[in-house]
Length: 337
Image (cartoon, rainbow, N blue to C red; front, top):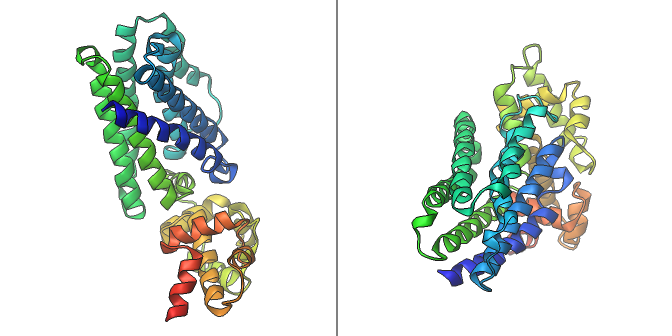
């Protein structure tokens, strides 16, 4: 058990750094700066917990009894809440509100609590936040077709969190280091599942945010000719090749269509079943597929850049997400046929 915990602690620390440098880039959180900051804070808290677990399980240093560990315990649930709220409940007014200071109160009192009280209380607080998450995800249940596998994987993460929370409530009854091994394993498995999910949908946070915004908002399309707007969108993509503009954004595309960003977002989600990031990646990948077949001597990088991707890594990431293979594999497959 301890060996598995140590292995997953190492993976967790590597994964936290990887997610901070790749997933939590500004382009994945356009208009969601607060969510991005709290996501990074969540990574820091989880990485800190895993570091303390390592020195306790491997070196026998009792850092688990320090005030710092208790603060980290109480930081995870509020950080996750403040990370998730702007994405899952966009109808709630964005920006800092004084009431949000209340989420920091458990961390303030954590150093004053005895270890025997702090652990069960921290996980009790966590259960409260998990109930909010369950309610918010339930509200998106009608969109599960767009996020079927992702919802399953995130559901497993949710189940792990619930299990650990209940184990934490009876931590004192568990022998020696067993609880901390189980907790470290759970965090590591959660990182593994999140990495798997984000490898499939790198801009999942933006897509969920757009879907939730369309769900909660009053319709903005009452006076919009949706068929005409979609026809114009089709011309912009397939005739004008607007997708090749590497700086193309939702506001820029909405301006070309004489729509607001909210109207375009709702139109895409309701009529196309996808948000702007996914739609744009699919358009670029489709164009890249044509070039890969038609220009066998062109480099993969030049193909990616010509259809609007800003780097080879972005191109590979999107192509693998849409087609389930790399551009090189796609080219070899079609060259053989």
